[in-house]
Length: 636
Image 1 (cartoon, helix red, strand yellow):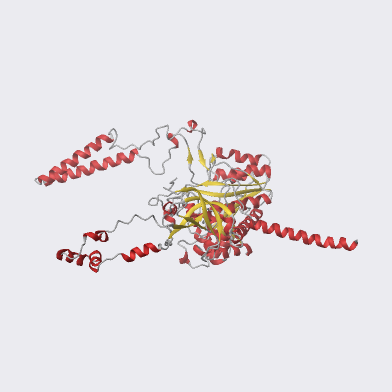
Image 2: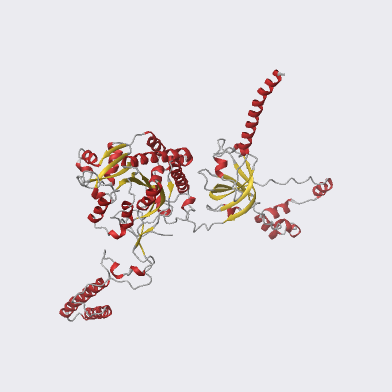
């Protein structure tokens, strides 16, 4: 009895193990469909360990866009005619055709000679000269081979469509959208791919105007693509950028949620200059409702003269000059007329300049903001950190992800995505430590979850991009003070930079890149900057010259993170606002956080788009932003 129980106990694990293996095998064969469209993502087919071979024979529904295509014509098989009956063979053998008749019917030259000489009976065999017209043959059957992508992965699936199912002319143009059903099968001829889809039914065809479609060519420069933001995700490069951006967004939420941070959505429209010295985009609804002008500067030569009168005088004097030129009789009069014309033209230019506001002239004096939508001046925010402080001072650790706007340069993008964090009860060292951990977490997440996209960028864009990410995880970030950074540049040759760096100067992008790429050859954190080069809210150090602020600089990416310990002391913050001449009424709500229950706190901002740029190895930040906004560029 005991022996049977022992045998059953031994057999039970074996049975369970076999059952688990069968279930695992079934899962390998099963195809996962989208819940809301019933189609199969190509990623679930093409990114399997076996390349999709285990799904051969499965019937699937897939949708996507044609990346490339070709058509192959099938050679028709000649029909096999049944042998003629014996009687017909005998009749044909009895038909006698003379040699002359054969020559008449086959060779036009001999036929003409024979007709002239009157030899033979040509009309009796006229049907041999003019055979009946051949009927128009139907088009030969063909097969369309389509490389289709649905955006879920880098790889494409080969889709085979017979001409009997759909006209190839509708399917072949690049960019055509299809929704098809068919059976997965292995290629009959070994090719680069290991699986293909033989289509049995087409549910949708979204045709393309080939001449007008900007992606009709296989290779389109990045500069041209920026003019067609609506189509850029259909390219392999931009699609991979979007997938990496998506992974970084998910990683961001994962990191902070795992460390007890709460997500807060900060406002885009604000009444506060969040850094104290940035150029902002103003938000108003008054421009379309009022005649806004800057009062012109008065000038004695143009007082009381309307622009119409001066323009008319310029035209008249121009006509006089033309008449004098034709006559060529009075050169002195022509000279005087030309001088008079120049004076009048100059007067017109002065009046035109007076009517227009000078560059940099503010329109604030002519706008009554109490009548505006918000009844006061408002701007697009340049940072979310100030607003996050209000939640950090109540909830502890918080973070936000969103767009930030700057109007301070014609060369940089005006809208960027930023990740802002604030931590209560923390100081500068805590913020730098969190920034270090967060950056390394993002690098590892991309390596673990975007391997195929990274392989694509390594092959096409930046060969060492994977190695760079791996090195970021294992390296120790160097931490140096601003003073040490300036001292290190004193040992560098003077001709490397345009201007010799002195203590108190802002570190340029070239300086920061040189620190990370040439001197330390790894990520560097520079901290304790002069107070003049950092935002007003950074905490003043005991030396009264520097503030507890830092930048994290990464090789090839430049400044990726900027942060600080924020000033929690009311008197100090109030003095900084006064020292910089900032409008105090904008910051009363911010000062309230110091009046009531103040706490030491710190945080930082990570440039999300710069992180994507670093991961992909691309060179221009406009190529990683879905809809880049630059000076003079806002196409859609």
